[in-house]
Amino acid sequence: MRKSNLFWGLMLVLGGVVLLLNTTGILKFNVWSVLFPLFLVALGLWFVVGPMIFKNEKLETRTIQVPLEGALSAEIKLEHGAGRLYVNALGLETGNLLEGTFNGGVEQQVERSGSQLKAKFKVDAGIVFGVPTVNMQGLEWKINLSRSLPLELEIHSGASESLLDLRDLKVSELELHTGASRTEVHLPAAAGFTKVDVVAGAAEVVLNVPEGVAASIKLDTGLISKNINLSRFPQGGVGFESPDYATAVNKIQIHIESGVGSISVQ
Image 1: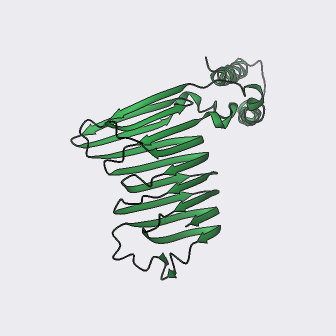
Image 2: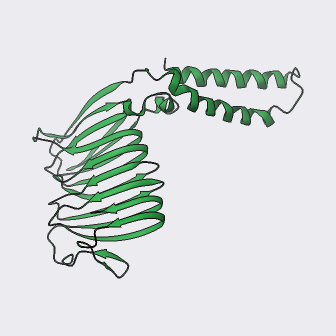
Image 3: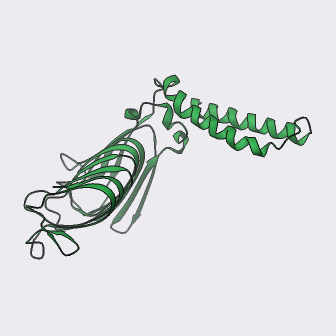
């Protein structure tokens, strides 16, 4: 049994006992007025004390391969949450869409429809409450993707550090949602047209556009630090754009929404 499950199980039992005592008249006050504050106290203690008590807790590691089996395009969704996420291209084509190690447990869903493959991976629901009790470096996903077919990537991350090296991949769409995190992306070098949408909270996001690839950049931002390479992407109109964007063979359309944090496009 996970220690996190035991902790929250005991909290539920304690809450049930308090409600039972109130219902039978042994506790003669409005229990509901104190249960929620007590829950917040327990949650705060879990966040503060849990990592110190359970810092050596070992996490499950899974190795997963998803075969192509004739797929000509793929959609991949990653719901990572907290920890570290690495995405790269497969060194050699092995007949698989994806090969990866998932430290911290993972839930997997794969669907096939004709020549299209859809794969979804998300953090094991069993560790949702357990996340604060472990070393965040332990919740680490290392994923390698096939470079042989067009890909649509959707990535959701929380308090994380992510490094996405997509230079050798045929990514046609990248949708990135991230919270209090640092994310660095090396964008595709020869994918034709790539659409990139970033929605970030209090985050640092670094987008690296390969040499020889044009880009059009639009920012909808609040209190952020912006660092745009103006020598490659001069400002004009409603954003920033390479002079040869309209005629470029390989080009990237970037739209970034961010509240606070740091945005860099190089």
